[in-house]
Length: 147
Image (cartoon, rainbow, N blue to C red; front, side, top):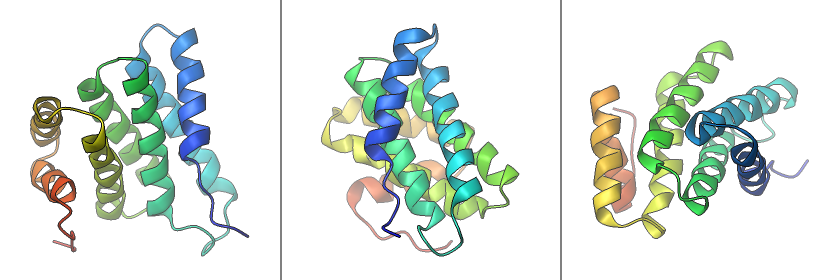
């Protein structure tokens, strides 16, 4: 089976949810959660690494929020929370799951000005001690090893 790539699918699903629901950031997080739950339910071990699925889902959700001009800072936290909740429910490694989510968020550097990226970093650090530093490493392209 080819590797599961869900960036485009997640982006389109989040964009549609944003059009229908009142809180776009919560809708994005909800779609990420649903996408991950479905992806991890039906994928046999070894096909697509869970970290790749998480990273792609986060990228898709955040791209949709950005394109719709919604708060990427608030969306980032809600999406990371959705990833961490799903990781706990599916017994995925929480550290690897957090890193994958942060790596997906770091993709925003291509589209978002540095001030907004710093707002995201500060919010991540406020919610997850030490995660802001890992996020910055991904932004700089520094390989993040297990800490």
